[in-house]
Amino acid sequence: MGIYDVDTRAITRRLREDGSLIGVLSTDNSKTDEQLLQMSKSWDIVGVDLISGVSCKSPHEWVDKTKQQWEFSSGKVAGENFHVVAYDFGIKHNILRRLASYGCKITVVPSTWPASETLNMKPDGVLFSNGPGDPSAVPYAVETVKNIIGKVPA
Image 1 (cartoon, helix red, strand yellow):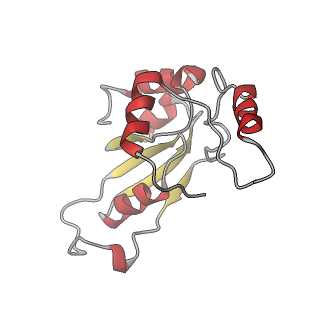
Image 2 (cartoon, one colour):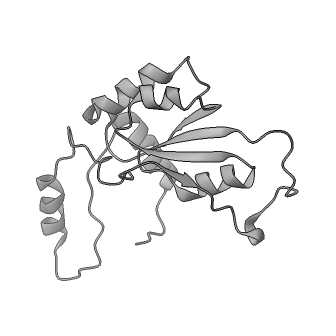
Image 3 (spheres, rainbow, N blue to C red):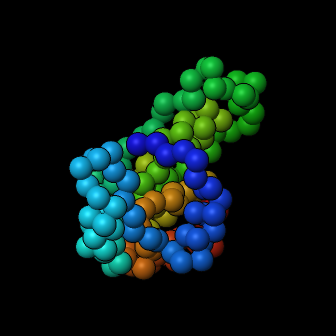
């Protein structure tokens, strides 16, 4: 779904100030504005773990690179290849593609992957992806980050 003629900077400012908000985008012309408003008021994402629904289910290696027409590096990777463990909290594939294009070895892990397992991998760095919803609804993810920060570059 796409939107146009909307000040996305104003939306971003509002989200930064107020946090996650509920809204409705619809192509169903049979619904009135009042019905759409009522739909939005019936939903609540506070305290809901939205990450578990978008995270991978098991660890895997990521190898896909950026397609050549989108490549802006020289194609030559200098130095050693860094091992990056990427926590999938709803990670965007293009972030993984860019890391792969720069020669990184990438291990993508689920949002529930234990910090101890990540530390046992001895990665050169850890990437905590962005994801949907409120971080307070996923205390396990917050705890994982706390257990890794300062022990591995993040």
